[in-house]
Image (tube, rainbow, N blue to C red; front, side):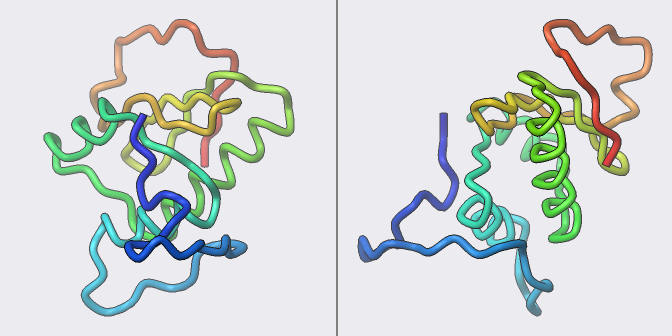
Length: 124
């Protein structure tokens, strides 16, 4: 698994988690927002999920990533292990107990598919 942003900064200094994610800054890209979000909430993205996001040109803005974090928290509070999270035009499969996004796809690609090995769904 690939921990985006990690726990340490480039100089090895410890990064302190923040509650929530602040407003987007001018010129801030998806990777910047994603790195901050993972530091804030400890959410990880598998290499497969990162590859899918990049190859399909998908991205979540700061508000979308905040909704993803909230969805994972909500699923976890209900005892979920693996969850389908729907955010706007994206569908993400998340290991709630490992706090890891396993895969991602545009929601249009979900039509007609059967998702197995999940125990919950969250519409965020």
